[in-house]
Length: 154
Image (cartoon, rainbow, N blue to C red; front, side, top):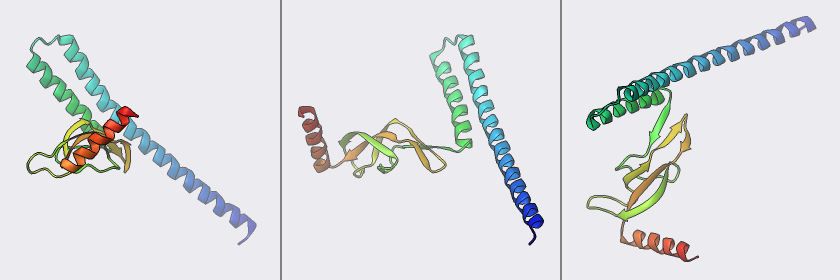
């Protein structure tokens, strides 16, 4: 291969790389714009709700629930995955246990009984662990209480 051919090949590779980067940037920009427009729609709905001065608490809650649904649909459509649901097993990588309760009938140790705050994952990365209250048998509950007492005393 001559020097001129080598230079031309390097230029083609650089051009293809720059073109691929520009395509990724354009796709990212379009994705971001779609998400922002969905958020803008939800903000518009909030403005309409506040301007209406809704007097009926049940209707107000329904409207807020609809707006929350809009936001959730936009976020999950963009790849945000909620973490933490009642009945699932708490996992250290995705759940932060903030409380322990005796296991009710039919529940197993580490089963989520209550979600204090949902967690979220995006593209396989945990952005925020779910804060949960879990079920524990008698022995596990006693260990948790002893640890909490030790922390309070120390």
